View (cartoon, one colour):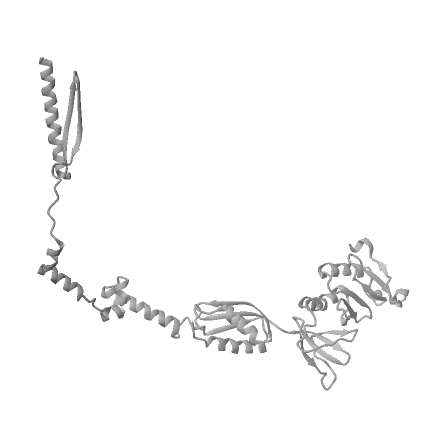
Length: 373
């Protein structure tokens, strides 16, 4: 009996503690709790069950109709109905307002910003130390330089959208295209460079006449890009311009001013032969013959012999072989050679003037065998 009483007291104490604790938390949350417990020998079990019966009464709400008739509500409603947003002030639209958007509200920051803007306008549009004052043209003759210099000055007068005279804003591609379009004496633009503070350097490849093409009694000049540039007439003494390689057509062909008569590679091939062949053949070149299909080029030498080339062959290999072949003959013996045919790959055919091959239209000749391979 005493044991049961002690157990009952213990349960009541525990029950009272948890009841106070959970009741306090429930009061703060707006709820209450009910504590239930059961006891058995040496076992105490406590369960907490929420009880919504207490503190569950809602506060009395004010009728919306009564609140609508209150003077204070009427004033608030009238104020909301007549509310108008104030238009943006002039300062917001002004330069000051613009600066304030970027948090440049202080006078110092505004002064610095305005100063930077004026400095940029000065550097871009107002003539200063960054504007081009010196123009250098590389790779062209005096006549081409004068024409190119005038075209460059004309291009630099453009100021919209960016002044082209400013070295920092110059469109190099635009300048190169402008020169190629307006100056026919320029074949290509190698580079356009600027040097601070005010120097412009233009490296050009001029279009120059390389060949003098003879068609019967007419003469035409061919530029380094293979275009027929103009017709040439002998002067009063009957002489033609010097410095050009004379190329005679073996067949009748139409030649028109502005026509792409040869490729730039073919012009370069003939021009290089004129420079390097005299050393390999040990004789100056008188003129060249060109067949109608523009494949066979014949160089006529001053010693009375000739050398036949394939216009598409590799001179890097052909000229060393020719030098090796002719090295077997003395200078006096070279005049006895009728021709040397180098149109065949890895082989060369040599014909003497007193040999039957010199009188035949079909070349038979003598192989240069392995020494030329």
